[in-house]
Image (cartoon, rainbow, N blue to C red; front, top):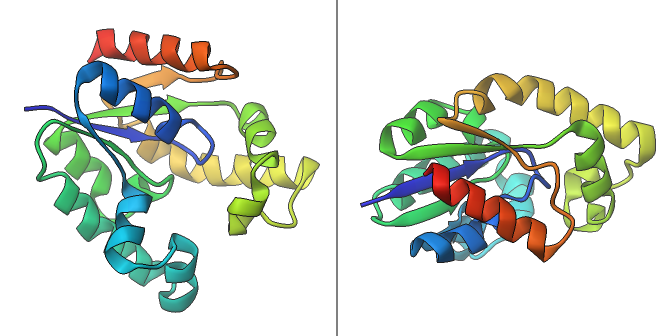
Length: 173
């Protein structure tokens, strides 16, 4: 029985790497945000808007515990999931945690391309986007750094890069 939790900031590659890594390790793949959306029939953005962050984080905590009961699974968490309640300690106790670490500069490049799908980033670009990411990452780093594996996921431009990262991770898990 194996449980792996991928954590990191939005744009770090949790879902992209998770899909490939789960196939390599022959594990089921669950994107926690998509799981929540499927259960609640609403997007994460809608849940945030309708219920507020506190209620969303409670839903996220409960759904995390639900998927952690599954066997042979790789879970890609939302970027904030490790930072609330005792989620990080819970994941470390339930399986292995992997922090996909990426610099502010690289995250800004990646997120600049998909701002329209991430409401919290709309209207931010350039220096403002970098400052927002840097501030958020500084707050989250103490939680992320508790992961059992901290992995440099800076180089992720091509499918080959994703496959290489997944292979390297597979040997460490």
